[in-house]
Amino acid sequence: MDLTTYMPGKETALAPWDVVIEKLSSISAVLSRDDETKRMLLSYQRELIASTVASLGWKDGEGSVDTQLLRSKMLEFACACEHSESLEMAGHKFELWLAGQEEVEPNLKVVVYRYGINKVRIRTCSLFPLEHTQKKNALKC
Image (cartoon, rainbow, N blue to C red; front, top):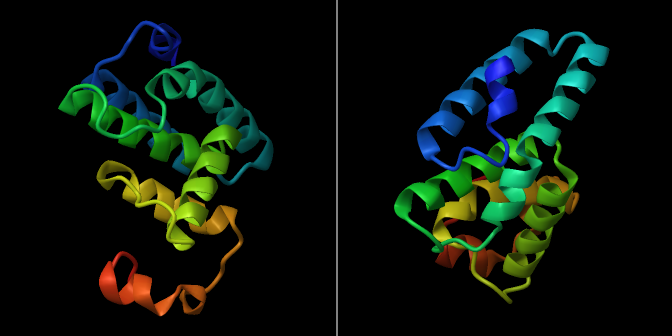
């Protein structure tokens, strides 16, 4: 865990963050049975990634391929650890997509569909407009 204190604001490469995300996810899975421990770990994870998530943003296509992959991984991890700003943005992008106002960028589809659908409180795929599921084949029910 000491290594994670180095990461925020200093590390921008994909490989180190990939390892940290993988290890923190493993730790979370093991400790998830105790509510207090889980709450504290989620809080630590949100604090750890907040500055990196903010600097990467939600604009897919900006930066190198590694930066784009890092953005995708970080946003998915941010949503998994209940980072409120990331969940809000996933929900917003999902709503725009659902209304036909905006396409979801390729590297962000997984995070927008997985977490956006939960954020906007849609519980069933039957609420999707038929044209989205037929044309895009984006989500399979």
